[in-house]
Amino acid sequence: MTASQPPRAPLVSAIVTTFNSSETVLRSIESIRAQTMNDLEIVVVDDASQDNTVDVILSVDEPRLRLVRNERNRGIGGAKNVGVENARGQYIAFLDSDDTWETNKLEKQLPVISTGRSAPLAFTAFWVHRAGTDKTVCRRPRRYGNWLQSILMGETLSLGSTLLATRRCFESVGGFDESLRRLQDRDWTLRYLRGWDDFEYVDQPLAHIFNVGFPKAETIRASVDNLFARHQKNLRDRNPALERTFRSGLDFEVAVAEYRSGDVSGASRTLLQAFASSPMNSAYFLRRAMRKFFQRDFT
Image (cartoon, rainbow, N blue to C red; front, side, top):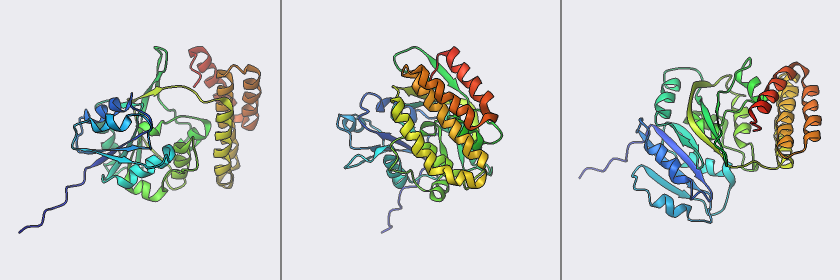
């Protein structure tokens, strides 16, 4: 009698994290099932939903899908950690349960990090859809000097739905910080950039990010101050200019949140703080502020 062989591990583990996502999770799963690269598994982590999200997931007839249920809510970072722990693929990709992929997303990304290039992580351009409006914006992250500089200045990569990375990347960087309720992806990215100098980037919008609302300005301020405190010393030790750039980039985000909430005077003061923290980047922030003003795209 011949012992049965364990099933072959898939090339890619697509991880979907959900919490009370019954209205959108099926759309996300279907966009993974429609991928032109089909050597994959779908790992759905339900973070203790209180609606019928689990029933919706269980209704999907898909042998490549596995559902993992958290007994308690661990937040988005904890849910992603559970997904990585349960993934069997050589590569790991994330998709938020509000978002979707273009059908060729993985097909376009895989060659970028599987052909011997140096960076074990790739992301893509993406579409942002504004909730309650018919507005759609294409985001192509800009590189200013290097990606670290760009991220410190506030360029958004949306790694929650555009990332594709090797398993060894997560083994090296570690998991997401579960004590952070916001900005977990950016914290993880900054830790990644302590070990690697670069990303791979596909300059084609291959993910759709569905914006469902904005947190309050005070929530944004508390989150960015927490993030700054975690990385301030490391950046200062590397180069004090990096610390100042990070502070100015975070202040700009707070200013946008204040403007969005109707606090124009507060936004003006915070924007001036951003200019003062890093005068050499003032022109960049002014261009970005003007673009948002004229496009009415305050995100």
